[in-house]
Length: 390
Image 1: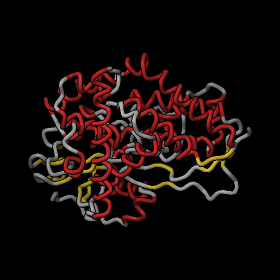
Image 2: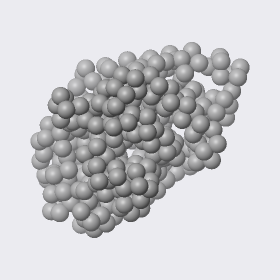
Image 3: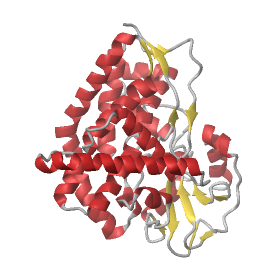
Image 4: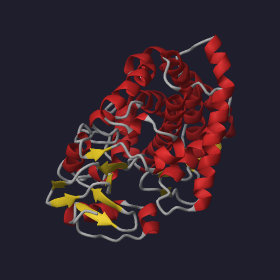
């Protein structure tokens, strides 16, 4: 392992709220080895931005990594030409142009459908009833797996997320992940005949039409589900919570002094739905006074980078007028999130304005317990009990 300073953490506390620990690491040991995670953590924004682009050393190719073992070898776990080739096939289906001209209208229709069902109730937990439902329905359309329910999409995504972050090797978590990937393979098989007969804009259809090998198609669909469900789900629910707890920020948006897209970008900086990305050290290397050894595991802590005091004044505050240009919530370099345009459209352009427009007087349910969050590699609100004026 590296010769970085060793910092021990309490895993439960870190899961409940990683930000105090990450702030201490940034200030005192910005590169440190955490034995409970079996990895060296990078916590400063500029260090992460530099190292993420240095793929010859900090490689995404992790043959024995949990993602490859459990989900198949996808483009996120490839570098160089292999990564570019798969991304070239994948990206046009969710490029900014395609999102604007094809998917935005689909997302808007799905949001209206979910809210039509939800609005008359006058009260709901918006995590399962709105955020999960909308992100799941959108992801069904994007992937082409329209033969499943949004509940299945969410459950499979969560099972894979839990599986690829199961660094403690808990057998039950691994088993749930295997069950999810088996179910996804079955859903893909069920959809293939229809998409071969009538191709569409979905990722599954586009990858099939390109001639991509079946194992790569399956692996990249699983990749899309693992990140494409939880990130928008947690961003939708989390941004609603942020605005309800910061009414002065909501008022700025209402007066047109900040946009809904700014809300999305600032929330994802402040509470990063995807807070970490792993890398494998490909060769001996020294960076920041730390010697890294081949095959060791490095975690790029986006959640820490996005509150770095060197770039974000009062970074622990939610401020929708902030310049988020230095935020790494979509990563950086060749592995910049391919789904960024779709996420911005779904959450910033559609979900947030529609939910506050349709659910008038939206507020926390005064009879419910306070909202709690969980996670450090992936983070979001666990519940969001609300009421509104019907």
